[in-house]
Length: 132
Image (tube, rainbow, N blue to C red; front, side):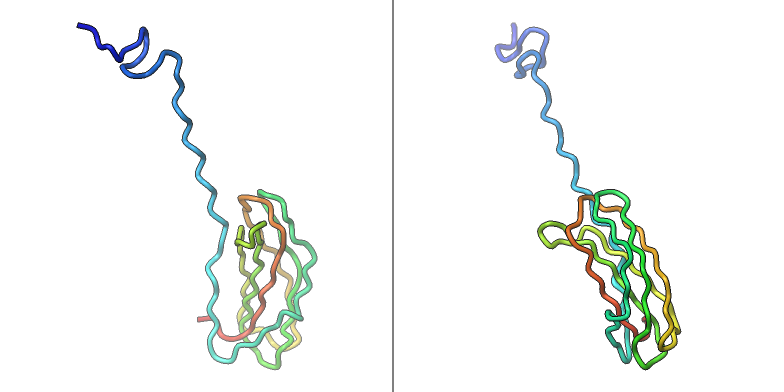
């Protein structure tokens, strides 16, 4: 007896020449460093950041610049560059840290992220305190 659902040369129930539906590619995860927690006296030092370069294209993105301890304390610097996507989501986040930075000291930074999609903005977060 023959299977009424079978077609010549095909699997039962599938028309000849039918193709499988491709599985969609998974959405790449953002290249995110963990957020550095500071304790004790914590001060914003965003005004001490000079961003020289921040690439926005998908793929390898470079952010370079310098950060100055504009506070009155010696402390640990935590600087984050956040690459934002079109909907405001984070498509990359990289962190530069340095411990025991004296007031007035300026440090250069270079951060690299793998962006799964183009960014529309680079946001800077810079603080000084004590790294946990």
